[in-house]
Length: 323
Image 1 (tube, one colour):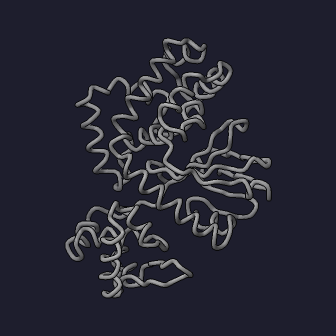
Image 2 (cartoon, helix red, strand yellow; image 1 turned 90 degrees about the vertical axis):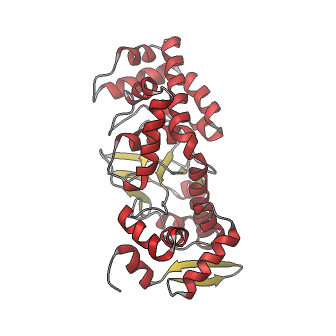
Image 3 (cartoon, helix red, strand yellow; image 1 turned 135 degrees about the vertical axis):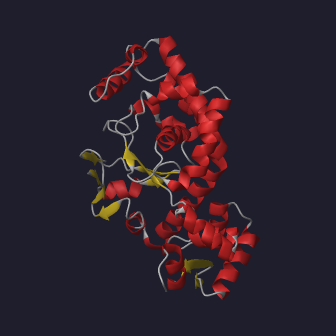
């Protein structure tokens, strides 16, 4: 289990990332590429696998995957804090990783699996090996993440807006409650299922919440307690339903209205729905109006904001139950 221990000072210093982190998305995109058990990513995965071949990026993918296995630990230095400033800044930070961190991270990874000779050269701060790894990371980002970047930005913007609204209305404590079931807020500890026991004591530093497009299931935290604390967790994907259900509801309602319905996990404003689905606000408003008139959506005003949510009938349609 992952247990993140907060103090009052940590709650005051907790922030939400403004944009997707390109290096976290690169690493987590490799997980999604290698694992076929998440239907949400199937269209992206099919396109990505074809693109890897078309662009001749197989060697780069293989190289990074040797440090990023199908499951388990990957070196912390692959996702430096500078990544929030963009992929170029993140890659430069990887290239400038201090020697002791390279040695420690590679040694920790080698405890659970054999690593190739080039990885041990990286651990010894061999510049050529490190440059080759940075080049491979950029190649993997370009082929896997860049084509999905606008979708990732829209999903993170919607998540950030929803968390921000809750923080303004009810405070950080209430916002952390909305992260269930992935993260469970049992004050003063934020808990989650995790492959291995990990306790993170923030010690007044606060934490950066990083909503991630390619994260799925369990959240991810850095192993080294000396690094700035981050909590990477999955955004709510509007397509989080089975392909068969998606096609059948699309035939009934039309693809866009079916997508609007699926995007209403919890509550959302028209602007948030538009961001999640990459629609204009006017178009999102029109579709919400039709769904509301059909008894599938209920809208309520809170101050200057109108919040939309699903009716029980809509929940039944999405879950395949009889109303």
